[in-house]
Length: 443
Image 1 (cartoon, rainbow, N blue to C red):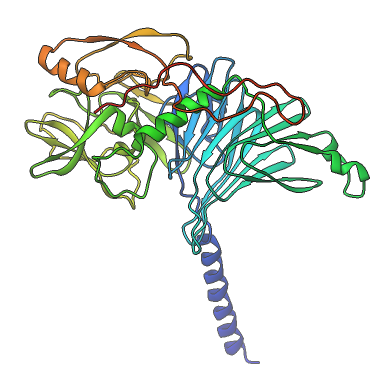
Image 2 (image 1 turned 180 degrees about the vertical axis):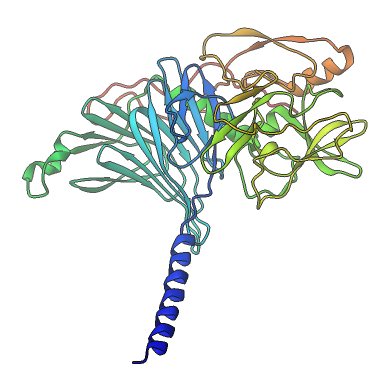
């Protein structure tokens, strides 16, 4: 074979190899970003920037390799693109091992429960041509979710307890695979899972029960689920979005309306004519992306990452939905007043830089207390679902231009999970329900 011919063959092979690498690299993209959607009490986050754990705030992006943990008084929720949620009870930690997109656009998620208790309310897409995948690992065990399900996993000493509130799950241990049906639970002896497959005792590594025992954070989990069930499907938005994260907050904290020349837009309650959407927040650093602007408002996710803000004379700032195929790491503003300066990210460094009142974290959930909502606050510091009729309060403030003082309370679940008092393993459990009345939805 001539040297010239050999050179051509090597060149062709190099091109083919490069093409193969491109296809392999594009087969699974790492572009997904999900939302830290609720922060109560002591919560920390490791943003995978090499700086370890730092204080967590509402609306911080969660990326692949990030970690979230709660303290003794802490609770947190992470919301995925489709509106599914993962919730951490006190003294818990989870690692987001994988947040990827498959070659057909399906969302591939793997989360490791390191310690404590986690709740998952998931409704992944499950079409023939595209199927989202969610995997929850704990120890050497894992739970696979391919259809809508709501469940809890608790790690305690050498035991893991899996309780299924809705749907069904497929669980895998070193000794085999088994299913857990709705309103059933499984107790897994993590110590026995060290046994080899040849050991006859491996069949005793888990026990299925026809019910489950209630846990202290069950009511809180149900309250959050009820909040999303009430507000996520609220009518009036009339926007066509492929994303569900943040929709509950948009429907609770503000309203959609039609503004001539601007179309269908959204505006938060208690905003006022002098309010700016960029007066409260922070710049947070993320590896590979640099600084991202993070809103300090409880509803501040979707309006800052998609679409754009616009200043409409006579209305003030409104959010125009759209641009769903792109992610806004920096603020996007249309028709801004000449006096407004769009915030710019820090030119160097990695530290979180606060803007205005900065970022917010709600206090640990407690009893009823009073809250003052000020004009121009845009609901900054108002825990979600904690105040009835925000729309009416907003109209009152427009007339009086004065702060309003309200009583706040955690939203109560509309229904119970239906756990009966006794499981088949002899565990005693209180029924999962609350006597408190559910909050009235703003109209």
